[in-house]
Length: 222
Image 1 (spheres, rainbow, N blue to C red):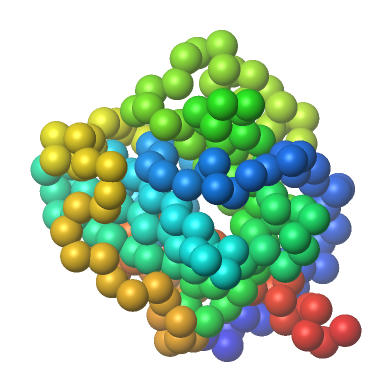
Image 2: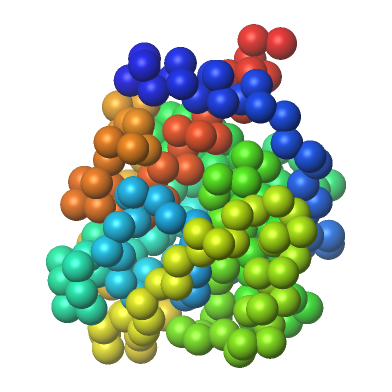
């Protein structure tokens, strides 16, 4: 763990140009079910099929995320992960602070269309990027526009991976997570080096915590 944190501390010294986020985001409209259309590759999502995400806004304004995928195939074992996020600056709702296993860091909404039918999530390091849609598919013109803008924002779109969709029938038809949902991660023991975590042990967005945590540590040290 300490070796991983040291490597991430070095990475944090690499300056990236400012990254714009979506304006006038209404998190109440962001709630509900999303399908993952594409992502930059993460070891933690290897062989994930039919990845879905559910966002719920709590009474205190925080969000709860539940992510699910089937590992290996559409009928493979299902993995579920729950996480929590807050909005540090109520004037910029697009900049969420995601808590994954006790580490808190940047989880930014880069784009969302006016009808909240697609969204783009990213991290200022440019190492994390997801395209989400309310439907299992996204039209090619919209998708190409997202990819082009992300490339202009210095994301490496040559590495973009498209998520096999749709999920199994029970998860396609359900508006809520299927099966038992674990409590949101709250302890540092739940996070490890992204390069060392396989899909079977942490199949979804757990790797966000490790890279995002560096920004929290930097703020604390300031």
